[in-house]
Length: 97
Image 1 (cartoon, one colour):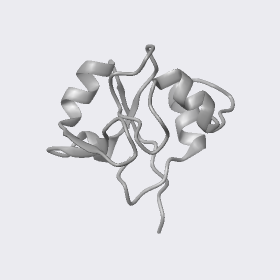
Image 2 (tube, one colour):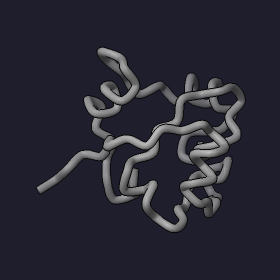
Image 3 (cartoon, rainbow, N blue to C red):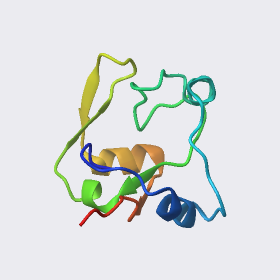
Image 4 (cartoon, rainbow, N blue to C red):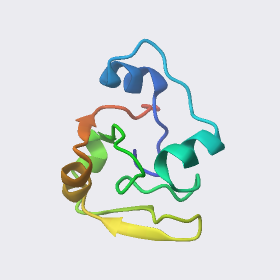
């Protein structure tokens, strides 16, 4: 999702086809991705993970993402994220009115 939005756990669960999901603790997220939380990029994970890109992000020219460490960012095209991760475009952002 965009940096100024939050992920809707309900919408993400629906998109993933699961009844419930939880945020992984830091140690599990790092074990699964190979990167520390706060620096996890959307591609290049240690093992194949499901990647969901919010529909607003998918329409952007480029995005800034975690660059592998907490102090680095990387600029990527959403289309490249989707191609490299076999990601899914979904409406997963919290809508605040």
